[in-house]
Image 1 (tube, helix red, strand yellow):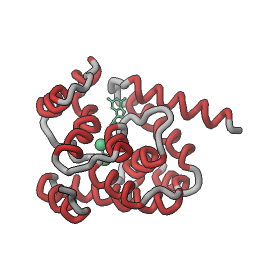
Image 2 (cartoon, rainbow, N blue to C red):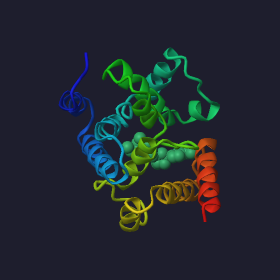
Image 3 (cartoon, protein in one colour):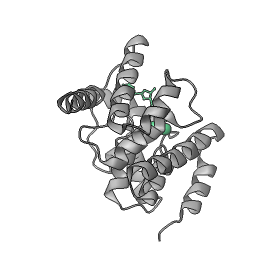
Length: 194
Ligand code: DGI
Ligand code: FE
Ligand code: FE
């Protein structure tokens, strides 16, 4: 059975704590705004934004278990920092529990934390919306990034990756190689288009 957006909102509202649900709605409507600007299918963007963190509050053991059950490869880095699996596990849940079978939506959920080289439009939209949605207050330069997101999406993806890497270095967190690989890809892409 296919769930409506309202059905999914209702399921998530029951499943997530208040602040996470508010963030989820923020990513949902910010994704739709970016889809209007860049010509993505609105429903694709809305479902991707709505479901991107559907696995975020699961216990670490459960994230690992879901990924294992679905035959996902789990890296050493992911075993050490299981929250990094909430994208992969979220894509599995979106398919199993929320009836999503569009690979484009599933990939937007899957790659929303580290990004990946050559992201599709909706993958970039969710990646950016996650960072700039109005309920996010902590990141640096949000005012500028929010304006930039509606002017140059690739440039915004790169800036977010650079800021995230700065933050991870500053706070002594372990860095997943995918975050670096994605940053390098967008840096090169934007340089070569100058
Ligand atoms: O789930 P959200 O909090 O809404 O957002 P998210 O899925 O983008 O996760 C954000 C967190 O992920 C943020 O604290 C930075 C962290 N992150 C991104 N790339 C890496 C990373 N954390 C580590 N340890 N390593 C990474 O490469
Ligand atoms: Fe997330
Ligand atoms: Fe999020």
